[in-house]
Amino acid sequence: MNLTPAELIDLDRKSFFHPFSSLAIHEQMGAEIFVQGNDSTLVDSHGKEYLDGIAGLWCVNIGYGNSEMASAIAEQAKKLAFYQALTSFGTDIAAIYSARLLKMSPVPMSKVFFGSSGSDANDTNIKMVWYYHNILGKPEKKKIISRRHGYHGSTIFAAGLTGFNNLHNNFDLPLVRTIHTSATHPLWDNKANDSEIDFGLKLVADLEQLIISEGPETIAAFIAEPIMAGGGVLVPPAGYFAALQEVLEKYEILLIADEVVTGFGRTAKMFGSESFELKPDFITLAKGITSGYIPLSASLVSEKVWKVLAEGSKAAGAFGHGYTYSGHPVAMKAAMVNLDIIEQQDLLQNVGDKGIKLKALLENEFLDSPFVGDVRGYGLLAAVEFVKSKSPLVPFSLTLKVAQRIARAAFKNGLIVRPLAESNTLAFSPTFVVTDDELSRMVNIFAASVKQVFEELQKSGDLKT
Ligand SMILES: Cc1ncc(COP(=O)(O)O)c(C=O)c1O
Image (cartoon, rainbow, N blue to C red; front, top):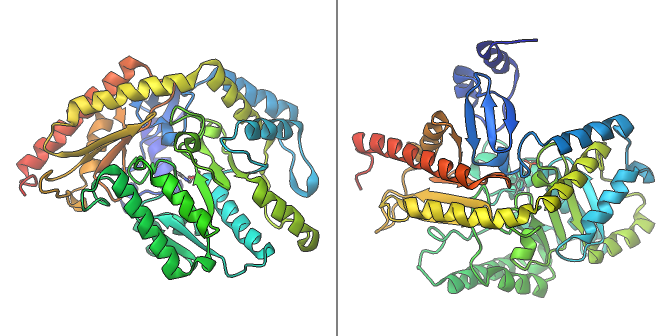
């Protein structure tokens, strides 16, 4: 069916319910529709090219149009497209990939449970946490602590853990058993302007107070992204995770590292847990696990947890959780080839090199601006946060939609960057195959787009404090 761009947009508007989109605006404006991708470049239905500064959604790590990946997927689909993993059935590729993944885990892990999205993997982890404490005879240990502005997904429990109002309001979320603590935002959570170390220690002291006031015997687990991605690209303060893990250990609280964004190389190490010395009981993986070529998620489960679950199953019977597509053979093959490509092309080295370059370009362009509160980054993750005034520190009102307007202007100029929710921050998370030239072009287009929007804000009087 050969449709014109206008016909495609109309078809989409009439039929496709877009996630995280403003429904009424979408009905008027329609979608931006892409039809092709190659390395870090996307092509829309009009044939216009865009540099993708965010790798799809922090996920197309090996770049678009990788023919080795496409052939491997086709090959597996022909050989064995599907077989289920329930009731002790399995496939060769799922067994081989599971063993490979566990071998490279940042901390010794015992087993891997597969799903199809980061959200379902986090729900899986929470169910395992509850099951674990029940089997240990501690049924009161059920509450999960997450951080404000953390993103953990949009399924019913994961959405509650996610620290954004938009995922809660009108959905009657969070459900019970969810507690939020502070994020590690260098501007907004460090009101006293403490040194980095003191800031991190203060946050951990606040967390300990929260645990004590809730009752440590009721707290089951703490979930955190090594670098908070959607919540602002927040790199943890030095010493924060070390002190935090001591507190968790003291109160027998399990740690879930949500590595949906940081897993598979984004921090220039294979896992963010390596970069920040986390020793989690569970690791959540998705996105980069297949570079977005096929939906897949994974929950890595520690030996400590596995032993309890396995022992408990003698009395409890079959583990009552799973998905039709757990360990889907085509996804397993894609995950396998994804690792091959990362290793063969030495992409972690590229992440390190290009990450340094991207941060330097952004700092060079924006650090001196009176309207930039912070430029931050780590590995191939970076963000620029805009403020109305630096001293005193005043945020732009979210109603001005500064980040969305900059993203919109950049899009018109041929660059995709991500405006972050409930924030005046834009994020970059390019593919691992991005080149120096592409990074320079990205930052140039971004700077020109920022200039355009600030000229508008100047004209409308919105820059006055
Ligand atoms: C850290 C983190 N966890 C979980 C998720 C949810 O993943 P999915 O959208 O695949 O359900 C995301 C998605 O952006 C994420 O960034």
